[in-house]
Image (cartoon, rainbow, N blue to C red; front, side, top):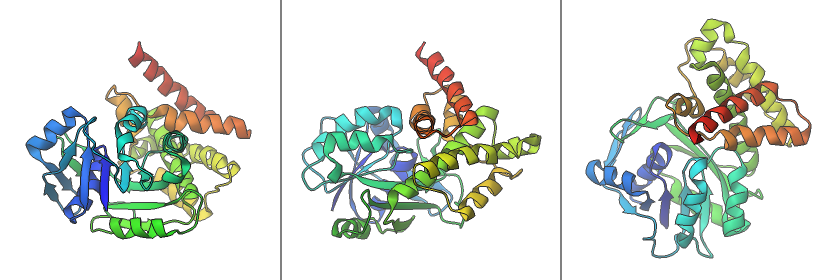
Length: 310
């Protein structure tokens, strides 16, 4: 199976790197700046878990020579439109496009461009970042001890022959793999979590542990209740056990967890505010669900984005 990984940041670099290390046929579609780093240093996976290093096969925009069997799309929301234009030559009649963006808005954009039949749903979890050298650094294990996980499936539900083919190709060491017959619900559950963590750490400008230690242990669960109410109104309720587990983590005084929304804001970078929080709060209004804390975090991030634009 011929695989194109769009983006070689922390997420695309990790999963694409694991696939390439396992002998899969993987090309990375990257911008010239990232390509220069990867040509100089190679793609290095460091930190928690098994280290890995390879010389990746790179493709620049405009250099794609035809369709791939599978496209793994791993870019941040502000780069989605450009990525769609760049990867378009890689999508043929039999191509499956598996995106790993947060939220849900990207599904409509991909379906409009490539047709709904081409698009799968996916959820990945890895505590990773690009360090100062450009290496993919895994910061620690996920709950349960895995370095990373991947869940995917058909957006219409069910298990198909295509899903089984993709599953066999993606079953490599380095991450736990799961096929979901209801991937939309899995995506909503992750969206509720990341929107909660993003709103919490952005509003308070600190880690979960710092916020809880300062007397804010109540705030994370309060934001989670809003996000969970939106998910439930949309038809994807979070199970009680999942809610209890997330809320427990949000009260932990020892937790170093922060969200990419906060880290990007603190670094003065553009964020995925509209994709993660703006879209969620818009859906909340359409569903008649009040979300005052999520609205406040969205407003704060819009001020940040406005400052960058200005």
